[in-house]
Image 1 (tube, chains in turn purple, blue):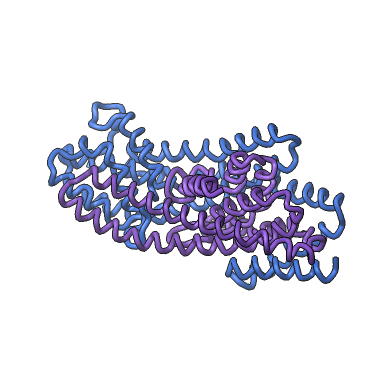
Image 2: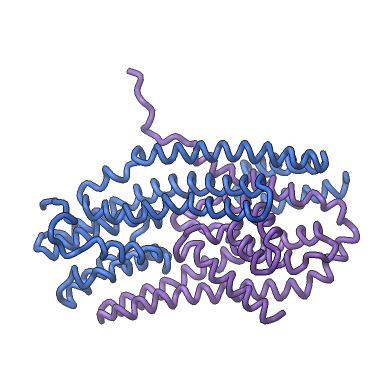
Length: 219
Length: 262
């Protein structure tokens, strides 16, 4: 199990590079990343379904400029792994409730990680300015790669620690809560999708906002 | 300062060089930092062409120092600034004077329009439209194979305009460095935006109706909780901008209601 968790955390850290650091081809978005992880973990159907459930939730925050958004893509990837690893435990709804709460925490921790990573990159900038004086072009590339590697390691550690901790806690917590509320928690999927729908409201507002100065003067 | 079509004459920079810059531009935001924002990734994009633009080590030093200064733009649309900078640096290498000041000024002027156009087109329109379409597809289509094929189409639907504008930006910036404002106006992307707004609206309506009907068939309580949580969170979002507060508040309140009433 430990080797599997290491491998899964590594895949999460590689996919998370797509969020802002490299490529940005949308492969880290839940509908894609959860499908990939579902396929790797042997349950692609569940991966697709969870990608559908989690997708809207994180879409409303635009990562424009220096604005740091909740790291929902990392959170969704961690969540899908936990749900697939715990499938068949008989407490499907309760597992989703607990994992969703964890995912919100992970999205917050991910945003804190991004904040410190961006602060740390100021040191990389200072190093680069020094290397530019010496015209060490290869070192500039190495520094860029080094920065990306540091981000990957940080995400890897975050994912691994959350996955490892959850695997210890979930088998105790889920049956305990499940015995009490499993039937009531049957509404968890529509509730998450409903919150997701509401959370895209700011982005829809932005989409349909007319630009100033575009109105034609009737005279 | 004269402006000719540089790719049609014998120039230092070839289309293949611009393609190498295009590949490097995938790491535009690699070392995003709070002091110079995307300037590190932006500077490193020039490495494939720096030897063609600078003859001496001192020129290279000045070149990189110039571009390591503060710069920010939408990551895809920053390619316009890349193309502009490459052409202006080439003109400097060909003996044009006052180019460094022009580069600094132009880059400063480009920050706002490139950010605004890119954010509005990609982050606020194409991305949500494509993802909602993808969601609709995987919800409605039967069978895993069809769902995966649709996901692949969704991936292409986003990345065709993404890759096109990333590359076109470099080429157009390089060909028209001094009148680049004509190529990055909001109006130019209006047709594309309209197409994706339509896609977004159709997908959203279809998704709402089909998901609502699906929940209705399972149980009326699921449909009611779906509507309730969406409305509750929507009102909450209008009151507070705190994502965590709204999501957790709505989620826990909905669960509490389900425990009480189900």
